[in-house]
Image 1 (cartoon, rainbow, N blue to C red):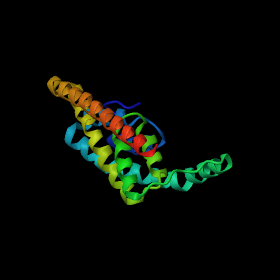
Image 2: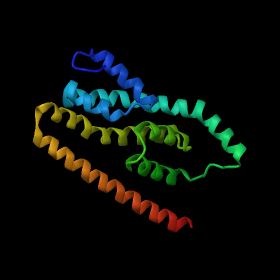
Image 3: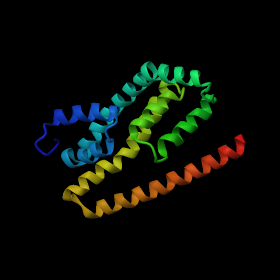
Image 4: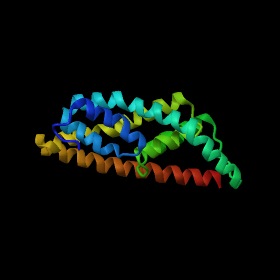
Length: 179
């Protein structure tokens, strides 16, 4: 059980390991804001997200990829191939658009064929930017500022609308271009 008596080291270790196996990261981000405040919560997030990205990439490419490729081969499926520049743009859109969980996005992006450097940069930047409001919201929800909580809610609403607009435009252009 995570509560105000949970030792910071235990909390951080849980934050490092649980999102890698599918535990919702949003809960940890909110709790980071509540337990540590905005600045320390953001610092912890910035230090832990790279661990998630590296671990997900290694697990996806060393353990999941062979299983998925063997299954696809048996079924006669091929993975789509994209140029690196197109894959980078697709990866940014994929990570920004809401839908799949943090864990699923990290593993799917790792399996997409993108280079580790681009994977790491895109994943860390997008996940960090998208995590900031949750830490701030956690801090605000702890009774620090209802006005700040309202601003964060409006930010989430605007970000969701923006993500859906990108998704709509990307898929419209993608399907028109590809058939």
